[in-house]
Image 1 (cartoon, rainbow, N blue to C red):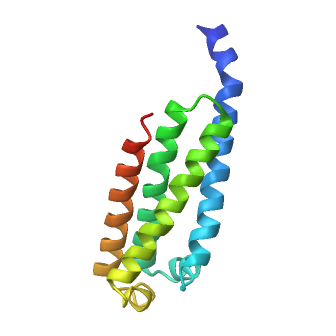
Image 2 (image 1 turned 180 degrees about the vertical axis):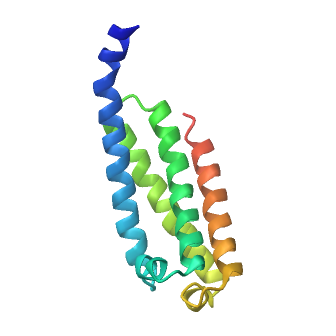
Length: 134
């Protein structure tokens, strides 16, 4: 048991490290695609920004977690993580197209728009994760 754990530990840290890098890269891209400053809004106590960004993060993390479970290599994980990020950005752009006032609603703290965006992100992430069962 202990020998198996010690043997598997390097793979755990490698996959975990790549996942953390993917999440950091996704966050960097996502907050630069949106026209508002999520982290500044969150620090200022804007719950709409927190809800919408949390939904995007969850929507991205689900397919990344699925890719970790099914990947044979770190490159495979990175590739599927990149696809998951692109899909989440497209989901945001679709929400923005559907609700043009979204760019004003989130900074204004309007929760209805934030909940819609978060739910859309989580739904897309769930479907994205299911599609990655290759």
